[in-house]
Amino acid sequence: MNETAVLEQRRQARAEKHQVDNALLDLHLKAADALGDLKESANVRAQALQQVEKWESGHLCNPRYVVAWRNILNLPEPSMRKAMLSDDSEGTALRQNTPFGFLLGTLAK
Image: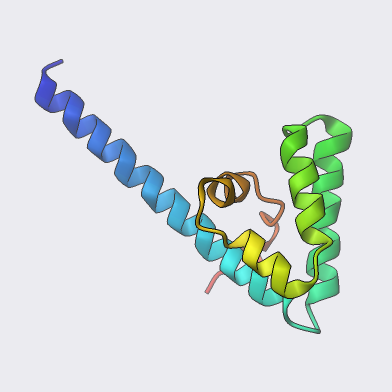
C-alpha cells in the first residue's frame, strides 16, 4: 500500500471517529435533557443505573466506567449534565461507554 493510500485511510478513520463522537454527544445531550425533565428524570436515571448494575454484575465493562457512571448518575442534575457533556478526553471516553443506549430508539427525532 502506498503512502497516499495509508494517509487517506487514516483521514477516513479520523472522520468516522469524529462522526461517532458527535452522535454520542447528541445522545448524551438528549439524555441530559431527559434527566432535567421532571416527568422523565426518575425513569431515565433508573434505567441508566440498571444498565450500570448489569455491567458490574456481568463484568461487562471496565470497573472504572461503572464507578464513574454510578457517581455521575447520583449527582444533582446540573452537575450530572456538566459531567455527561464534558468535552475533555474523560467525557469522550465516558460517552463511548454509555448507559443510555436504551434511549436511542425513544429519542430519535
